[in-house]
Length: 614
Ligand code: AGP
Image (cartoon, rainbow, N blue to C red; front, top):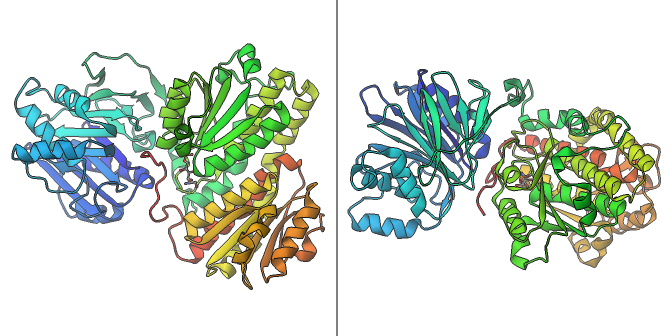
């Protein structure tokens, strides 16, 4: 939910941290701030509500020399997005600076104690309690003068989820960080070291990274990094090479990251499919680290996810049930564990998450593992918490996705779910080798078909500009068109703030049709399909009430077009794979709606790229 950067080295720390915050701004942009340790040992802090540009203006007018700094972009949880609530937060003596991602659930109890002991609170945030606790425990008591030990003792007293990055004016060569449940990664340089919410914070300086696990405390110094558990015992760990190139994390000439990421979808699908076929054309998924016997022992599948990833899960259900004849339940991760589902060793739980850090999904993973289910993460982020806390991880290889509205990661997730479904069918023998090869051949044609559809988007952009003032838009689909209707509605909601809803087309007559007024845009996902006749009935029902019908139809299929005010064409492909094509016009439609309305396509209001609080 927030972006965090810490740096110790020999470069001007302010520049390093501000550059990192620019890369992390997609994680939250309600406010931003930095604290630099000046050469004369003062903690100099600047912070500002609003986007990072506001802080940029401030610090460009304020000399902040120093080679140690911490920084933060905020997605507000406790306290309005004001200057006073902006991180970093300081203690009473201005000797301690803290930035924080997450929620400290017992902060009120901690505040009461601190105020009773004379501390003066200067914000509404939960974060500030940590600054005062460091002030207390670093200045007296068993951890006096030992900042890592102080932080370890405080972490033992905190409840909730957090990443903390802390500096103290008396420690010119030390930044201390700690994590519980939320993402933190170390960047390893030469004579300089970094911590960040994700690798984009520092890949401009180093590609050597190291993951930080649950309840670990990181000591970052110029000469090296030491990671311990909460008892102070050093933990071993391997560094890994980050292969994202910095260009991939830049806009590459597009006005918005989202537009670039839409165009990157052919490659995202190609890369997600790549390397998963054996010489004989069959699938091998070593990442699953499940024996064939384990796979054959599966008796039920649950898919848990949020938002667009949930929609990918719905499509995974169609594929797995069709190819594997296994019962699949797709659950909103935030609801999953509270209904106490019946899980066991015979259960495969697939957790889909682009960021690999979504708190709702992470807690669902933990619950499933506690119930002895086998958990497979399908994620786009190497070394993410969900991937590390699952039994196995299948990576979607979509590359860094910066725009808050997910596009290439979603299409890569759908692809990955098809691959998982085919693999399970292959091992369980519910589809023979030739069928698996045939479906993989069909899938391998999709990147070119996606590229073809993306060349047809001008009418969609024009339509978006025409419809931009519509207060309501409905999306209808049947079978695998239904999850795409949901995804199209979500995109329009989160990007253009339009009241958009997706329905199974057959459901429209059971109430939602009352929403139709003359001119209400209704987008119908209608690729060639066995259910076309029924879908036509639904289109006629809404048209008879004045709806403006926008139909996504297969090249050459004119069965629905007589009832369409606008027809958007996609190439033909197997019906189960059509979502990889029908999703595209809906992504472009919502992005262009937002652009036509003058909204920020990459950073829609109230949202963040990774929702790391429940
Ligand atoms: C997608 O456009 C949204 N930004 C959001 O629904 C997202 O899919 C959801 O928060 C899940 O995120 P995850 O895939 O990183 O877990």
